[in-house]
Length: 79
Image 1 (cartoon, helix red, strand yellow):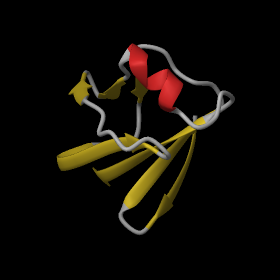
Image 2: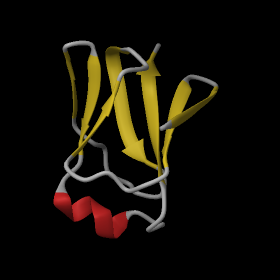
Image 3: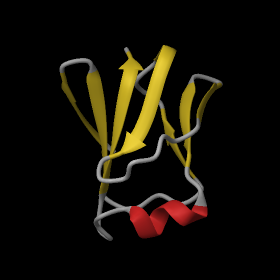
Image 4: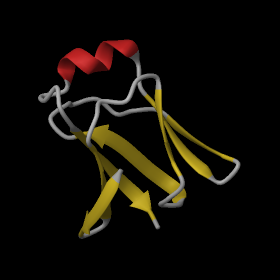
């Protein structure tokens, strides 16, 4: 995973489409986090466990991702 940031958002760039969940060791979530995949108009569920930021990916989301090679997660409300 590679990261970039703009304004108040962090973007996690994945070179493969993750299955089930994406586990990130950074950034740190705050109380007002929203997560989505660029090109997919659905918020994703997430949790913070043992210092990891875990994004839950339903099986149905894979067909909605605009690329089959990579995807970008937009993380708002993180540090």
